[in-house]
Length: 324
Ligand SMILES: [Zn+2]
Image 1 (cartoon, rainbow, N blue to C red):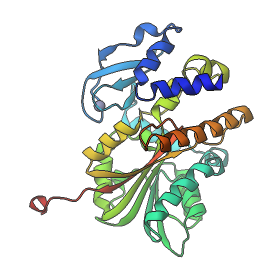
Image 2 (cartoon, rainbow, N blue to C red):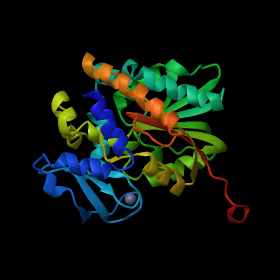
Image 3 (cartoon, helix red, strand yellow):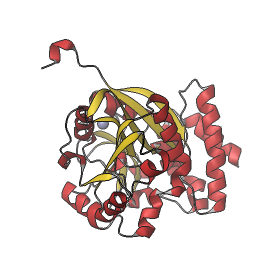
Image 4 (tube, protein in one colour):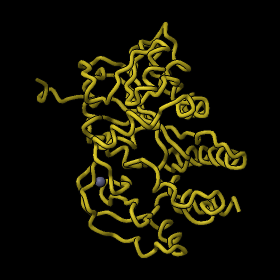
């Protein structure tokens, strides 16, 4: 059974549409998988050409056929989203624990990849929650650490641990040019409603030789989990449609986004899934990650099927003619 699943992933790794269309045949939603004109333009490339991947009466996951980003529609208004993250998203210690130890195996890889390029400096974690990542993996003697967090409760916890936190979003933070050596966006880029605008700002506050680290689920891996026998077995059928994510990425779409925002991708690292509460699911995730890692290496870093991935990028050099 497991082999069948891996063969399915492997065969379709470069063609999620083929996989999606086959799986949808046994669902009532098969009629919705078609190329169509989206109700709104793609937030990354403005294209209206989208394919519907998963749908229910009130929500749909579509793929932009130009840049490849996956879009959950309808998208909430920015103001509504901000108020949700400020007041409800993390309101107690139980909520905060989701961003801690159960992500150690992912966060340790991210920290290692960053510290291979920088041993010290100024680091900003956007969506830092209670600043678990900074406190657990970075030394205060070598790093000056700051965070941005919408949740007031989480920001207070981060401040109590000695991290300077801006309560709000990156646009309201008023950081100065070249203020940071490293900026991280961990498990959060899918909440950015206008990621190009935000990444262009991040480019400004980074040093010209700075590092941007984005860690996020692989879109296809999440979609596979929401379909067919895998979804039935783990009761995860279309749960993705009930999440608050806005945009899901794969290697192509994250590269497109970074390139359009003035960054150059320097490294991509496969990451395991977050720790799962159900033991069987956790064991399956771990085994799956190691197979995904081997495939990544054997394919000369082309075939990505890992549950999550990390992208490191640096600001592109501005041509001398364009400098002010
Ligand atoms: Zn697009």
